[in-house]
Length: 512
Image (cartoon, rainbow, N blue to C red):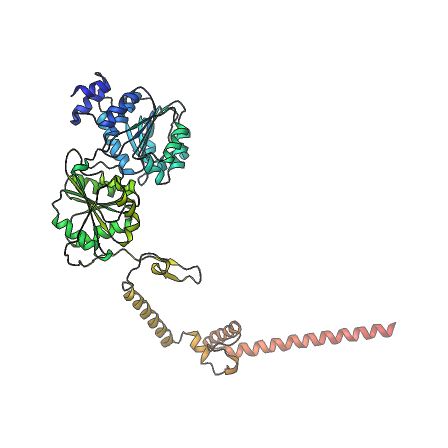
């Protein structure tokens, strides 16, 4: 253990021994600048990116301020589930000599297990949405929180969590220490700090990526050749661990499923997968079972993965900040790294501010000769229902992803054959009421419409059904005669009663 960590944390700090067990020797720049102020209880705004050592920096304050058995005293808010799991593991290692209970709380898993474990927890690492769920259930008590950490604050605001974060802060005590870590200090971050932090100390650290050992290139290529070029580069570049970034879940699934047909071991990660599946894929990548990770920016944000040699931007990032986050995962700790951008016409608008910026040195490479790869898997076609007549409309007509429509031809043909067979069976059995009615000789042509039905479908249909039923019973004539006789009896009775009434009136008149 070096004297530097002992000077920062103190000789009797149990965190020093935990750091020694992890094998850390020298503190990073953000740790040297922030840990003394954090231990003094000051609010901090630190500009630090992933891999800068910020987790150890705010862990020093959390472990110092939290005591076992007094409820939830520390709360860490993160934008993604993976980052919450990662911070929980780091905090557990750093606090093992203080025996603190640390719980990660996020969505996508059962909330009931979290409800059972929260009363015996001292530090909670959570995503904002699940914390609000617990607040609505009254299953979490934040009244004793003395240290609040907002990690990757800029990403939380980009994802629309700013209102959720403010609701959570309002449930915490006013007397607390707030530590805010963000890769970029945006206007939302500044507004939040002015509203909820007390005289915060701003700290910034230089990028931990060595620009001299980072090579950045881009290939300008047609969109229909991007996948073929990516496969060619993966097979010919000398790489160890590779991360491929996409802007959408659809492209992540597209790459992952086509790689399976080509015997390329790759694991995908995006928000559409369950948490168990995402954790399993990350474990496979970290353990070396597979060397390719395909991810979206949101899913990969905050993940500190060491040993990445190549970064592929299959989709050009939407902003310079996202580009900075992506390239910051390679060329660490004095190792070399390479960033390869696959630029097509769809990415020109996003790539222009990046290439014109003085922050990055990106060289253009001439695409090599490649053979076009056959696409074996495409995302499922989606339909949207038209509000009129319940019809279905293809995505192509609504401006979305266009796809072949040949997959459902067999299904549609089978349905058509089933309808034809059903119609033929009805006609063979003679159960088709429509055909029976059309062939009825009692109906005259002038009393039918163009479909062969009478103008009063309901009445004649009822009469036809009644005749068919009576014919089957064999007593149609008897019923008809009886009905006619009853009608005649009623008519005679009515006539007799009217005649008797007339005679009565005439006799009364004569008496008068």
